[in-house]
Amino acid sequence: MIKKILIANRGEIANRIIKACRELEITSVAIYSEADKNALHGRMADEAYFIGASAANESYLNKEKIIYLAKEIKADAIHPGYGFLSENSDFIKLVEESGIIFIGPSSESVKLMGEKTSARRLMKEHNVPFVPGTTEPIGSIDEGKRIASEIGYPVMLKAAAGGGGKGMRKIFNDEEFESAYHRAKNEALKAFGSDNVYLEKFIEHPKHIEVQIIADKHGNYYHLFERECSVQRRHQKVIEEAPSISINDVTREKITQAALNAAKACKYFNAGTIEFLLDPSTNNLDGNKNFYFLEMNTRLQVEHPVTEMITGLDIVKLQIKIANGEKLSLDQKIIKINGHAVECRIYAEYIENNFAPSIGKILHHRLASGPGIRIDNGIETNSDVSVYYDPILSKVITWGSNREEAIARMKRALGEYQISGVITNIPLFNWIFQQTKFLDGTFDINFLDNYFIPLLPDKWKTTNNDEYLEIAALMSAFIKAKENLSKTSMNAVSSNNFWKEQNYE
Image (cartoon, rainbow, N blue to C red; front, side, top):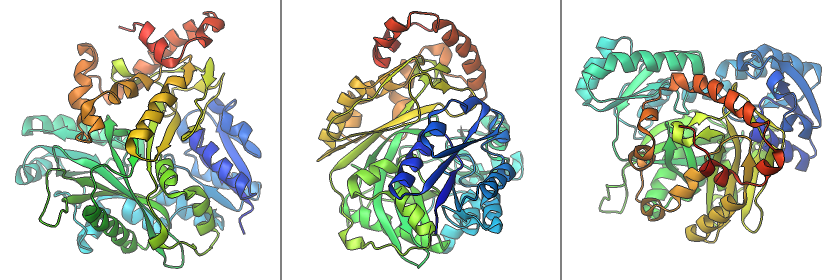
């Protein structure tokens, strides 16, 4: 019986798990690094322990230290959240061997589905449609060029060991291949500890649709419908919705069944997400749209709240119950879509500087509130936004009886939500919610690249991923200097107005 959970994560997701533990009357244990010594999650948890230096590989990615601590404090289970070690099959295997419960899938399932090329091979064996490309890592530049020519440009190089936009490069011809190949491998190695990359055909105007599945250890599988995740910057989602405006009932039935088949293929249990690319231009005689397996995220997703809002289910609590060996008392026939939900990921970043991180201290933080509004936050006033970690601050989620009401509530929530001390991406959402292509649902994963990026100053449009942290470090000096300004005047402005009044050219 799980009585104490060590949460191997930080920020908003750690706080989310702490709340689930509290409702289940389970002791929550936080870990924190040097950079997070004053972080909110450490103070929210029932217990908190220092885990190491600020660098992630010395703290939140230190497998041995986390497991040693869990044993020392007699934790029954470890919840990894998302990111960090959540999809590291070696870590999960160590947890399993230690006798501690891992709140997530088995190491075997994660190894099968977390490594993208093996997942593609498995989908091929089980007749789940996937994007044309390789099912093995690319061994050399020459091999990659040959396969790219066979598939036909444009193609996409992707990290085999991870996702989240890391280790991805779009390539349009042979001349671009070598540079993109080296960049993708270097970025993949830094992010995931493996430089393996694979190649797939680049689908030019797809929708990004994912299906939430949940399965217990007794062989029961359920889908919790789909999410629309097509609004992305640098291959990372910033707005998610449930359900998708692009999915009709015929396609919904087929894509959710394909997701269940994928989960069963790897004997999956706990919460997971099957991601697909949808071709919105196709519409077969039966009303079905073509879709292709992209990858499986063998963990809790950042955007899980929108699914919770439309189904009324608590996915984190379900994860814990499954890990505890309980049989889910769900019925697919009575799990229904109720209304519509939208989520905006609030990042500390300079949207006019190609989304480079904004580093500093939160000087003022006031949450939005009211009917249909939920905020999962990892910050409060005086929280530090560090150069060491992903700069996500919180997630604003709104629910409405339909999409129009959910969006209207989101616009209100963003107008009320105040953050100062760092620059946020809230103005980006204000822009998006005024765009016809978003409102009528005709956007695709190229939406921001095609319509927002051209609005940025020319000098920032070609900023490379490798330069983001360097830019953030330079910007942090400017942010710290701003702390000497009057806090009274800083606290009086919302993040939206604050951004508008600044000129960081």
